[in-house]
Image (tube, rainbow over all chains, first blue to last red; front, side, top):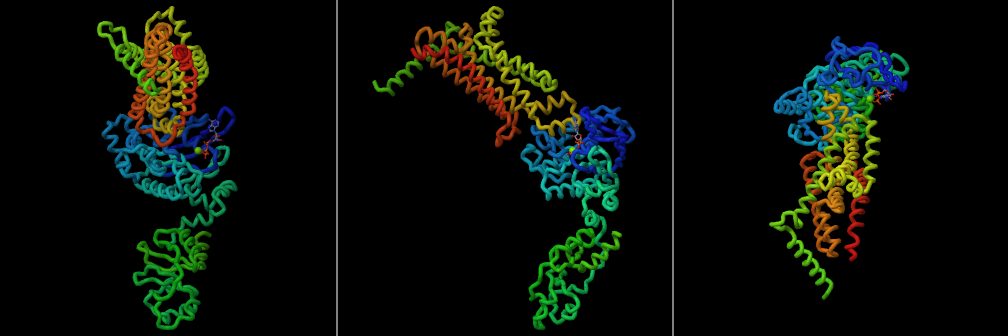
Length: 369
Length: 264
Ligand SMILES: Nc1ncnc2c1ncn2[C@@H]1O[C@H](COP(=O)(O)OP(=O)(O)OP(=O)(O)O)[C@@H](O)[C@H]1O
Ligand SMILES: [Mg+2]
């Protein structure tokens, strides 16, 4: 547990980087500091490993005032990851990862063996261990940065915008990886970002900072989106927070209908009576993989006896996985579908049913009210 | 005789002179070889001492920032004093010992190297320094284990400039009666109105400079295998400046001294 007790940082030029921060970071959780540029996130983060000394107040780790600890020794027990990875250009990837164990006196062989293990843990090919850092892509360097921070198995991990310098696809991959690692390792992570989406995705708890270094709100991601403390937080989380909140509700709550889903070996006359009532029918193959949408009008001129598989269909767009996706994914797939309907599938990709925008609207209304 | 044949004849003459005067077994102090060895001794000792001074001073300047401006101004002023004047000024104290040449030349090496050491250390990316702090490197360990190795390519680049300048300036030391290949150029050549010693001296100085530079390039490859070579390194502005100043001083002196026999 990390506690800030009235911790403040005032610079001699009058800048208040952090104003009286009171906050508790729970052990084994991911706490995200989010806020606009200059709101004191980095300063607060660095108070934890004494890279910044508060001008007032106290920071404790598990009840111990960190001023009682030697800074260098304290830091060897706290992992730290930064935006540009900060890898040592003159050391190989493997030796970069082994840095802290070597500082702690681990024999070189053991430190390197551990480093190779960590490379696998963060999803890197251990063969890359002999490369120099500049021979890696930005995303790979970032993974090395994470591995290096984990090398001495510190209970606390500080991450200052670790993923903001990589492209969105790589970033999503790194976030997934971090979620997976955290599932396994249960570290106390403090993560700084200015991206509210990243905060919501990764955080168990989110601290929103406002300019002037004040804490505006400290809450679970869901509470933050449902109930912003004030106009600043509301503006910061974005006016689309309603839609964003849908990520917290499972798509399972939707009632899917399968009476408009037909296998493609059926004949046109078998489905005509349904098409009279429903503007869109979903055609699936005999394995129940989606084939495409059929509009009621396209059936009008088709003579009887033709099989559905012989007709042209409209692409079905994105599907959503009923078991694992959120309402947000379902809504997304409905909005993007040419038929205005979302196709729900099971984890193997077999169609379970479709949901219309009306049904979706009703479900959204009932869960979010 | 045609021009090419005359040139060939002249080159043959120079070569014969060099072969005849290379080494006198019964007179070890005479000949070209002892001059070459003196030249290597004087220049390498100056470079080594300059380097040994520049690194700790550079580290100190980075650690205690206010130290750098006065120190740089101080050594720059020394650099402005023509080398020959410094040699003469030292003569009463150090006599005709090696130190008379080594002390000023080590100072010149220091002048060229100090900014390189300081710039090299300043160019260590901030995120690398921050990462070192955050992982629990103390200030001294960080300087020795992270910042100095990362600055090494810039330091070696400075060393290359300094070594060529120093090897060239050792020739001037001969003017005040110290050893080195300059004796061939200045004493023998000038006095006898005879150009073979000058040519041999100049060629050997140039070859020595090339060989030393090649050694340093090799050292750089071995010491900094991690430095990427596909990207121009940002020490080059200072490096060019240092090279320009060095060129403006040493060879200028050397060439004025060599000019009369060349014309004669
Ligand atoms: N050494 C310093 N002297 C004076 N002011 C400083 C110093 N270091 C930081 N500040 C100020 O403290 C404030 C908070 O800085 P901090 O780096 O914590 O912000 P941040 O929230 O991390 O911003 P960003 O998202 O841009 O990284 C800023 O206004 C900054 O200018
Ligand atoms: Mg910051």
